[in-house]
Every structure is written in C-alpha cells, then in structure tokens.
Image 1: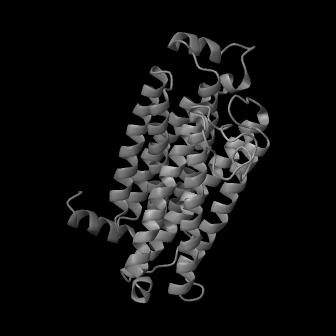
Image 2: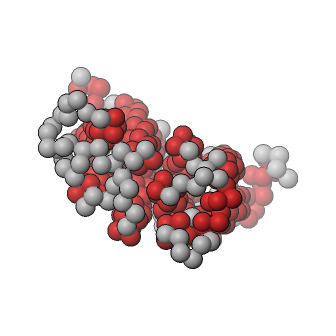
Length: 329
C-alpha cells in the first residue's frame, strides 16, 4: 500500500480523476438549479430539512441532497489530493502549490453554496443578491477547475521528467494573448451563469416571445441581460480562434498546436450548442450540455496557456525551420 502512494503515476491518475468527478458535481449543481430543486433541503445547511439524512423525501429534496453528498465527496477527494501531494513531493514543489490552491477553492466553493441556501437564494428567488452570488460562484468554480487541472498537469510533467517553470513575466505577446483569453472566458462564464438563471426563472413560451421579452423596458433585469450573452460568446469565440492560432505559431513545441486546434474546435461546437440552446428555449438537458462544453473549453484553455507559458520565446529563424520540417510552409 505504501508503494502505491509513493508512485507519481498513481497520484497523477488520481488528480485527473478528481478533475473529472468535479465536472460531474458541477453539472449536477446546474441540474439542481435548472429543476428548481435548490430549496429541496429548506434553508438548512449542512443538515437537510433539519436532519442528516432525509426520509420520505420529495424529488426536489433527493436532487438537492444528492448534490450535497457528491459535493462533500469531491471535497474529500481534494483534501486527499492535498495530503498526498505533501507526502509525495518535496518542499516548494509546484504540485504542492496546485494542491493547496485546489483545497482553498473547494472550501470557498462549499461556503458559497452554503450561502445560497442560508440566504434562500435558491428555487424561484430572482434577487440581485442571487445573481451576484451566482457570478461569484462561477468564478470560484473556474478557479477550482484551473487549480486541479494545473495540479494534474504539473504532476504529469514531473512524472515524465519535463518539469519547467511557469513564467508569467517576459512572455511578450503570448502572455497577453493567453491572459486576455482566460479573462474573456471568465466573463463569458459569468454572463452564461446569469443568463441560465434568467432562462430558468423566466422561461419563454416561444422564441419570438423570448426575444420580445429581452427588449421590454419593464422586463426583469435577468431577462434584459440575456441578450448580451450571445454577443459576448461571439466576441470571445473570435478572439480565442485568432489567439489560439497566434500562440501555436509562436510557441510550436510540446503540443501547443494540438491544444490550440482542440480549443478552436470546442469553441466552434460551443457556439453551435449555444445557438441550439436559444432555438430550443434552453431545455434542462441542453443547459447541461452547454455547461459541460464550457467547462471543457476552460480546461483546454488552461492547458494551452500552461504549455505556452512554460516555453521560451522562439527565435524567428528557429520557428521557420520548425515549420519547414513539419511541412507547414
């Protein structure tokens, strides 16, 4: 058993497994919101309707309670990841840093979720406070995914003997392109979370009715904000496509072009999914698919940025030789 925990490959696999489970928990949380089940346990936390395990529960209670159990399990997995990282890797190792950030963000994730319940910003609540809390929750969720992703990636690099420092300074245009893309994805995620909340609380009977509602001056602010999300998505998609190509051209080593192509492909699929989501009036299943694609897009962008920012700037002559050798010229 001791040998198992001293194996870097096992740790790396567990880190990727933790990331995958976190995505499932996030998707289930979206299902809780989309089905209006957030009040299934009342305003009790961490208890559910005043008890540890609800009995003879309604379907809403079962949905909410299942989310709480899965969230607790994800927290235990991140805690185990942190303990394992500190036992396996030496002091000041980047894997320790990633695991520590993961632990911090899983704790704040739980506290934000608890706040939604305790302040009763769930179910049919359409307050400004809930919208702000949803936005903060989305940002924290993305930071959590980024921390766990980097933990797994750093562990994988260490296992393969390719440890290289992540340099944020002196990256020139590549640094700005990566930073701009991640910021736009965060902003897009926030606008998507608020839009999804509006779609859930104020569903339209038809596409024309929904468009008319979006532009009514007397409509609820969550309804009026829905019109901006597609615009933000288009701008972000165009930026990511151009930035991905530019980053791949300037840092062509260590799989950066492959990650750039993957990001551009996911962006295209996500834009189509967003269009379908609007046409179908945001059914629950499509909201889940849309969120899954958003999470995958964010993770791929994080990996692309990490890969690019651990490479030294390539001289123009070297870049040209590499392109000739790969048959790109």
